[in-house]
Image (tube, rainbow over all chains, first blue to last red; front, side, top):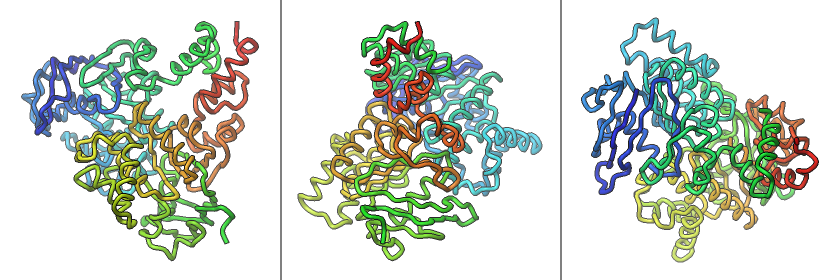
Length: 273
Length: 279
């Protein structure tokens, strides 16, 4: 269980907080989607929920983050990393810069957890297979396309088998197949008991993955509920969040004067549901 | 001679990276003046490598590249940059200035613009990207999505005849995507050529007149969104791990023909609702 209680956070050197009074609780095995317009505070919430802010980047935090009941404030960096792992928006930020091959890059995470070599190698192979990265294992991590780098970043974090995962736009640079593979990998992690918070603009991905979606605007949580309820809420579009295609098409057809029941039936048939 | 009206042309272009990755493997492509072309394909299919030849950031291993009718081999990046502006996928590899305005000024100033002309180019680019209120801001105080818009503004300000955008909608919310769609439309209205790499099939279908599909360094398909996203093309899209936009899939399943855009699907469906909807 990962819990934020009454969190207000201000970056070092800034007068105003970016997050205001945020309460958020992730149960074990739960996948929660985080959406909101640009600069609503999604990335900052990811930094705070992963314990990097303020521990690594400074700033001022009011309220608390607890991981399985332990306050994060008292944990050392390596203890924190063993409990919660964060995936950044830009894979170039994620890359260690010290590994010569993709295999070594992915192995770094479990190795740093102090796992035996055999276990490290097994986990690395598993993460590689999960995201079908076999053709890239010998490649230099600096010489990957944007999407390939993002997949390698996610494989690195899968290999750590973290208790809690915070992801900031994990599929921003991925093609639809890569996006689907990542979705399946994250679902498998959750089934093994990991809790996940995923900030994404791709609401279509969250629609099929999350049981619950949280909407943030102006640094405050403004909606928190079951995925379908949140994504069908007309306020979403007004906030600047693109609803999933299914909800968007339904709204457009109803606005065009078609009856809702007919629209639902047509879309169900059209989507093969 | 290059094809008539060709602004960009590659002939049997091959690019092999040090280490042996054959990223582009024999591409013949003609892009005509004023076209709006989207390049799609799976991660690692050679899209970025291809477009980096257009402004000389990469040079062919084999084959030739012509920019505005002239072989790019004899021209320096600085000369090509006056014709082709390229906004990077990762804005942080492009941004270096301490203020938004000076970042945007760098390109046009290098092209020799000064005074009122320079100011106008900067102002127009900042307005187009919605950054006009941030001229004095440090680029790193902007979030990722607005740093991407800043990278776009820097290219727009150069007023190049060709604008190449590498994954422009990445990380953008609904308003950001709409803004980029407006920028593409305005460039097109001004008869400038727009080439964009994208995984966002809805953006591709709505904002581009031509779609080039890449797989394993080659061109698999080249046509209008209606052609490329029509049902017979789906196996080719699938071979490079792409899916047609949802509107195209729904339209095909309901027997409405090619409906690559949501607006088109809604219109068709609304007009024919009595006949096709299940009761």
